[in-house]
Length: 342
Ligand SMILES: NC(=O)c1ccc[n+]([C@@H]2O[C@H](COP(=O)([O-])OP(=O)(O)OC[C@H]3O[C@@H](n4cnc5c(N)ncnc54)[C@H](O)[C@@H]3O)[C@@H](O)[C@H]2O)c1
Image (cartoon, rainbow, N blue to C red):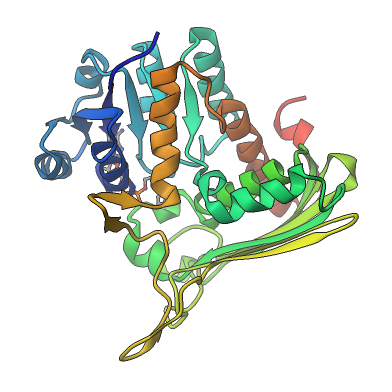
């Protein structure tokens, strides 16, 4: 069935839910009807800004006539709203990570598959022109078979200590690894096999936030290709950008170096490098890859197409992170089959 415009509800009216609203209210194929947040003030403020209704009740959203919902609740709180909306017959776009446990990720994916509804995870790096360009090199065979990669995505300590009020329920692994792990798996076109990790903790714990400070995890993929994933949540705030993101990838016959953040160097009253995910408005709408993934989900619902970056991709990323945490706890290599229960 195709729709003229897709009627949408947004769950989670915080920082990233605001980006969902910006993407969806400036797209011709979607109409945002309802914004839901358990915090009444946040729900009302965002709804008033975008001229739609608001609620604090998932049940009210479930019984509304929205076709689809987008979910931007904290990392550890994705499963309940996703399952509730799938039960109510709504298509779901959920923020990364799909879930913070393999059992929840599998339950969400199996519920979507059983219902035939669309479930997409917002792995938006796949919609970034830089990473799309890299995928083109791989697809044209210009790198040869994948051999190795190094992927770094870190935040300044501002993110866990000032930006998020739930960082102790997540960690750099759940908040940041989903982007790099999904994109490397997508570029390699291979599934992960085995994981071995080292981590450091103490800096955030000394500030009352119970999570890892920094992790390096080496993941072997099918065909013996491997990647070192690095993340830190304690980069000093003196770093020129809130995010540090780079990737190198080598194949048997070629390689690529991608530097995503910092990308723009500004010399004004000071030297700084603005975060490229900050919204830029021109020609009457917000632009950026972080909006394109959300609008792509609308297209999939409107055109009745199963989205890329679906539940099974979310399960594999959750499994890579879960295996990393088991490796850190038990100081040994951990197979993906083990965390998937295989
Ligand atoms: N794609 C990206 O690059 C990107 C960037 C930032 C955040 N995110 C993701 O977006 C999600 C939200 O992050 P954020 O920074 O917006 O957090 P936030 O704390 O700013 O907002 C979360 C909101 O969810 C609400 N909420 C919590 N439980 C709820 C429930 N059961 N029902 C309804 N509302 C509920 C909270 O009241 C809050 O307003 C996270 O999963 C995060 O990883 C993605």
